[in-house]
Length: 567
Image (cartoon, rainbow, N blue to C red):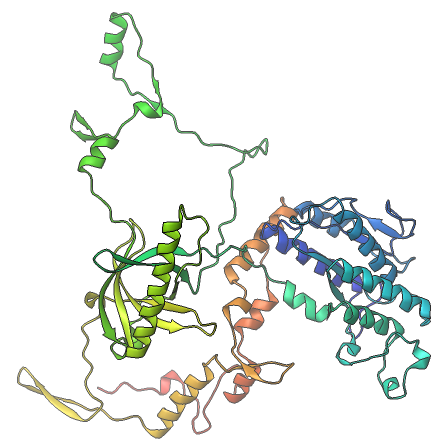
């Protein structure tokens, strides 16, 4: 690991520690329940309680959850070994044996996936190409396949991954002449044979780091909100609402601690009676003292009018208080689809409204049968609206604390044949601004006896082309060039774009966890910088100069002094 990576001057140990650090960091901030064990191969010391193999160092004998202590251990304790080179094949066999022994003590329903991440520079294994090495590789493949282990390898750029070699298991001397053109070392061919044999994946250091160097939000199971779509008197259809775009939850679990003792602080609410001096004197004369502390059950709300207090308990609120409206979805009317224009969209997201699946938690058979009838009715309504090219407009109230909104339900039949609605919030009439725009033509108008001439002209050809070019340049639906397929696709998809706020927040928390007594530095994220900068092809089309300025071919730069205001 002390040797630099191919085509770079950076040693492989730097990339290896960076990769493992990011894998553990992402699991810490997502509060992942995954357990792991860190095994170092090619180490000067040997700590191997499971076999007699030398230079294998188990940092822990049992799997553990990732913590910040592991990040500190990785940063301070893991160092490069200049005397011993790690044998990746031996380490892989050790990892498979460890997984096999660990799974014996765990129930099958507890383990949802098994993964092995191998980080190597491919320089430790002895070169030679003997048949014994391929036999060991086949044994590792059989063990990985039998345990359903997902193998991921990160190391130097292995060029033979794109080659379809059918006889890698043969020694190098027996390879055909056509495959001798591929300049591969024996270790690369051996690792390629293992990865392809167990259907694993391999990444180079330069490919893996950009994938790992960003934080991801916690995985949350999508839970649909239940609504009853009331389309008539006593006729309700069951629907489940899912948001198409949901903002990432970045509420980390902050708690309050005492700085001196580093112990957690809890907050308690205490009710105490406020007594005047007259009340205290009267109580002492009668020979008793009034308690100052009260329980929560002894406290009620009350209205104060000067010195008069009018109690108003929970029973009074239920009897005379305001009855808040619960969630509802009530049909107002059906409308032609052409009447709902695109600029009517008020919210930044859409709701996918689907009929609920078979619910096993229903109380009895009658409820289950009623739900199935409701799903059939939803399907019939969706297909009828599709045939009539209409949409349903409903009164939508999310919960008791929400204001009523208008919701347009667009019928849709998905690619999998699911009949559903797509809900989009519509504006009320008051949400529109009363602006009237004149037509784009020459016109004159008279205001209070004064002749006001207003000149309008259509866009000239150059202006029209410039606007069209701007719209085309900002179109993200076909602006990303995939280097593998050499085809254009959608760019900046939400699932592929890291959240800048989450990135900076987690960077700061991680730094304070590792360096509690230091001030926060200015963080620089290369991924976000590359994401925010324009694409090179866009700069080239825009004729950007060295000063990052753009100038049309038919124009020239002018200063503000050259501009004259015309009266």
